[in-house]
View (tube, protein in one colour):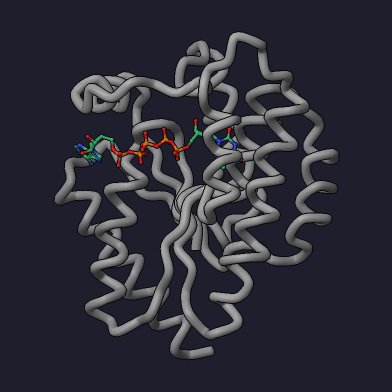
Length: 207
Ligand code: T5A
């Protein structure tokens, strides 16, 4: 499982809710995030998201995302799945396609080649895409009062391209993507997640 969406759309909040729903269904899971998820991958996260005096090139950014992913897949995601335990991933390669591909303009073919190298045919069974008006998520992020990382400081047009990218990815794989309307309040999002979780658990039990 992966959770995707633009900054501040509520992925962390939704994953907490989804995790407690899995607890209620008696399903074992491990939560992870990208970039990150292992000690080494978290250090790579620091490099790619921190601000540096020297500008990070788009190629460096892309390769660091995949370096962190290679580590998380090998050390964490694959071993967990092999134990029959669910993995909940806060972002995965769809984020790279949306941000580095649609956002930065790096060729999607090149990103897909890297994805094939790093994780082969390992893709999430289901991807929850949270969508909301940008003005609303901006207000929520401001309310949180945290400093913004290097990518969060990008211009509005960058996020428009990344958001359009997510829509294109969802249209290309409608069976994998599940859209959650994050314009709704916490209760409304929780109710959508409850319905989705019940459907995913039923599907998993029927395998
Ligand atoms: N990135 C990542 C790439 O460019 N390429 C890649 O390949 C990968 C993997 C880090 C950055 O890296 C980039 C994308 C990012 O720029 P991240 O750590 O996932 O990615 O960072 P963010 O997306 O910025 O995650 P955030 O933690 O900032 O936002 P969330 O998790 O989406 O939002 P959340 O849950 O923290 O909510 C934000 C605020 O809104 C409130 C919450 O309480 C919180 O205060 N809220 C709501 N309020 C009212 N109603 C609701 N429905 C609400 N939902 C949440």
